[in-house]
Length: 567
Image 1 (cartoon, rainbow, N blue to C red):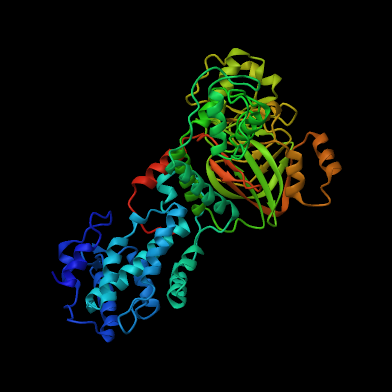
Image 2: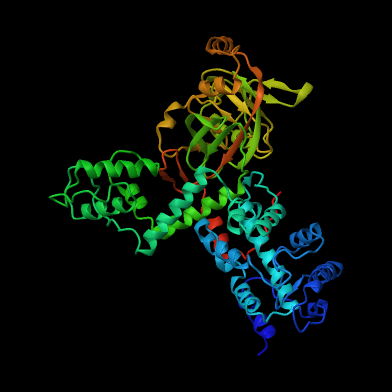
């Protein structure tokens, strides 16, 4: 078998990339008997331009070229001069690309998604001196296409979030893949240039470390299972206590080098500290009581935790690298909010997010104003599903809660006496009224709302239902985000000495709606992360509130590799 045929048989056997249509073989120039450096640039031009002319894929052996448009643009920028193959036919940086992609497993990339076996065989032939010009042309193109494919996944994610998660509406990370490749081949620093395309934040790196930790546990046999049984409390004795202790040592919630207790069945105070640490970072009630919910979290498999890391690392690759100098970051799944100014977290607050059937969407916006003493224009869906049934059961509800009943719009708008309406006969379908709640202590928006105009009519706001912040899971809203300390957030976003506590209080005491434009807008990011690493390096994990992890995980495991063209 000739060297040429050996290479062609190696091209992506069983790989998920598309097979080459039979007619594309006609696009290749005749094969030279040996390598001729002066032919390579002209053959590059011919291969790429003929395919573009006929609107066909660029053929590479028995496969097609990944990232074809990007490859074409790359070579046009360098006037079709080879990037990988030298004049003597050597390919000095080819293996560095293969090594970098194999190392990409640490970032959740799957080496099998890239044509490494084909490249390995082609590099062997190049190194042996057997490669013809045509074979080196295939190698040149495939190295470039593979770099750009892997680089696009590092830069913007392996998946298109619009296809996988319709509720994700944040502009993806962008970067110059062409410049990255140019730098890589010029310097020979292939791995460093690919590494630079990945998210550089400490939080992403923390997830990478957590991925390695959970993979090691999974490969060693997984987590110790804590059997079902009566609820465990400090001071109890049970055979299951030994398993609980071992399980917490595996996840570093309990030091692994502790002296074994005299009685391994005793639930002692040291073990209780480990349980509290576990509960805290899993968003559970921190009470050292091992009941059904804590045991359920303990028994999530290491394999599932690996999958959770992969999903959340992918989400980080979807996010912009630079979130701005001043931004508010809401983690829907974590029921939390951070306010960041010039790289420093200035406050962290608990938040309340949308119920499962009224999910808070993921998107980015710009907060430009806030409203003190807001009235609440009740959305029609809430008016018909929530308030109308209340009014039917309690005719005095509207007056007691400060609601106006309105009909019409603009100049034709008029207020209706709620007592004049027979609410028992009013249908939710074609509902003819609108409800507006006046400013005041019972207003659902509290004393302030923070506005970042968007298509979802979602905003941040105060709430009179303060007791809900004591819950560990806080999915109680109709989609908007209720904040724990709204006056603190008001002072932070106004960032104006004229708006001190006294000035804000004077406006609130008036009980009249007042709109205040911010001197400087704030970026707002509503995101969905079920795993993250905090500033202390602690891995935090949360339940998949909206079942969004499952969709992303399934796509990561089944979707063929595609070139990720960022917006």
